[in-house]
Length: 327
Length: 298
Ligand SMILES: Nc1ncnc2c1ncn2[C@@H]1O[C@H](COP(=O)(O)OP(=O)(O)OP(=O)(O)O)[C@@H](O)[C@H]1O
Ligand SMILES: [Mg+2]
Image 1 (cartoon, rainbow over the protein chains, first blue to last red):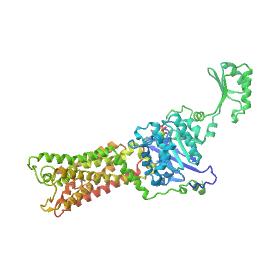
Image 2: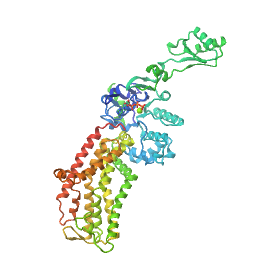
Image 3: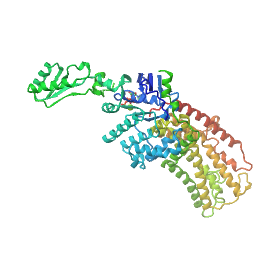
Image 4: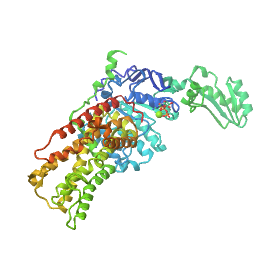
């Protein structure tokens, strides 16, 4: 499609909300959300159960009316112009929903027929290639009620891929998939992103977000806690030096001398903040010296390394509590 | 964000547009899934069985050469006494027998389930993000329900015609007014009656569709619609409510018999059609207003 982008300006945003709010009775499901999803990004939308991810997605897709605030998708205000926006958006919202008495293929044909911009002449071919993309070709003739959860999830994804899309909104897409399926979906997401599709992906699997996303936002209790490039978010939490050794006491003493701070000694591990970590990047030379010093002092080192700062660390640092503690 | 930047992600640059003719694809798809459903086929099967039962019962009853008691418009469904003389009358009898309950119940099930069933299955949200468009989806659902009204009525009529032709003689038809018309003309009247009966169901269909937009449980919507149908039928029998009877959708239903008069007596027929139109407009708009603004949370 004619993507007349003027050199992929980072300021382009595919989803933009300002003070978006949804109230159910007394409960604020989404509270003053201001979100910016850059074009071309794979955007991870994180948050514990009940934090308002699905509610946000439903508002963006015009399924529910915001209580207040504004939102735009692909540069158009929603829900006002939702019908011009949606043909360019593929969505998987809160799990797949299928007609159990129809085959997988017929389910896709049904959803495609619902789109008045979809050409009926290419319908079958597009359904076949979508089935192929999610690895369901062999099971396409089976009734959807006989599908396993993972197969249903794949079919839901196939429905989102019936057309070339500018934006894919995927609400917990790997829910119910086997590890192989998860990997395939991640590969698919990367592939779509490389074709220029912006992917908005909600999840509570930090690992998953970290593996595929370029950007992320974190929600808790309906409020946005932070958003930005994943690398920046993860950099917010520093990596910790970890030494696995039976001689924990001696190791701790040596490390302390060499300027390692915040030392914590557990059964057979010593962890701490490596020197100079405040400045960010860790010079590999320093680590080698630390290791040499330990060995020189007769510490039997079984394992040595800096645990990469993960999104999970960033998350815990942000919320200061267990991830799945719902408010 | 400047104008130029906004334009870059604008969907206006996309190649896809709505094609009028393509929007009928949803109607075709809807017809497909409605009539492929086991439940729809079961309903049609029950409807087809009614004329068979009536025909066989009449045949057995009169096999010793006696005539059916009651006669005329007194006992049993209208026209039943004439079936032994002319199998075509089984069509009228079967329609008169199914119109008060079986037909509207079947329509109530299909109409009640139309939106609510999609909602409880979760498929509604995917139709809407496809994007089917709320008004378009509602129109398609309504058109499909009306098609079902027509098909259901024709199933009764054709089953009755087949059974009538197999079990009884066919021939000239004696109208209620006592005049005789040819068999061909009789068949035409039968078709006309079937169409009027189908049109009589428009009110229930609109009511069912409206109920369907109120809830996200298909079963609840079906039960409510059929419950309303029964309630109205009962209220229509209570003389004290005489003043409001003309507003019940079922009040003029049996006026289709007037098509068997010579000349046709149009007064109540037209009242019936007008009333059905009123129901369609009223509950159609109510359904549109409700569905257009509804939060789809299922
Ligand atoms: N239809 C509804 N009526 C009332 N409250 C609702 C409704 N839908 C959601 N909520 C409330 O809004 C809040 C946000 O729910 P939402 O489904 O958006 O969470 P989520 O982040 O998607 O959670 P999960 O990770 O479990 O999918 C929850 O507290 C929920 O109880
Ligand atoms: Mg959710």
